[in-house]
Length: 159
Image 1 (cartoon, rainbow, N blue to C red):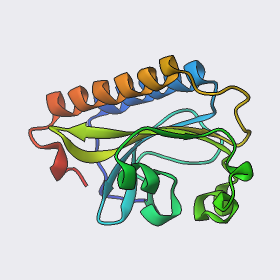
Image 2 (cartoon, rainbow, N blue to C red; image 1 turned 180 degrees about the horizontal axis):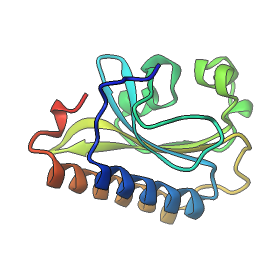
Image 3 (cartoon, helix red, strand yellow; image 1 turned 180 degrees about the vertical axis):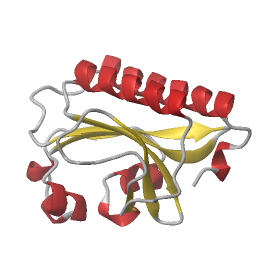
Image 4 (cartoon, rainbow, N blue to C red; image 1 turned 135 degrees about the horizontal axis):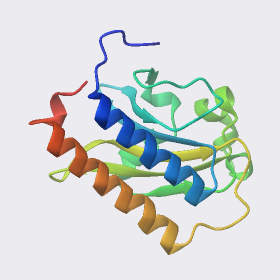
């Protein structure tokens, strides 16, 4: 569902778009998303080029995303091939999207969970994520935090 009242500063939306496209290239995955998570809602705040018709401002049920695991564990997680993880073939996100590769990390603002930065692909990844990959996505999440704090007095008011 599309939130028609969603409004993000155009310059910030462009910065998110660039950051996510850089990340998809670095991690060799097809889709990058910055999400704001609140009240069981997963809202897209930034999205890379993609063929899945996901747009900035789109809302999804949090329970139908892999990012729920990030919220619950409060740390960077990855799945090289969801289809080969026992029980994950029944995950609502896998059932609806068939996303097989996933890496995501929390976006924290002043130590509080704001949302996630995540990358995914329909094909499994062939390589194990390295410490460099994990550090890369965590550094990107920190950059997103700084951008939000520079552009909004209270990023938690963004819904």
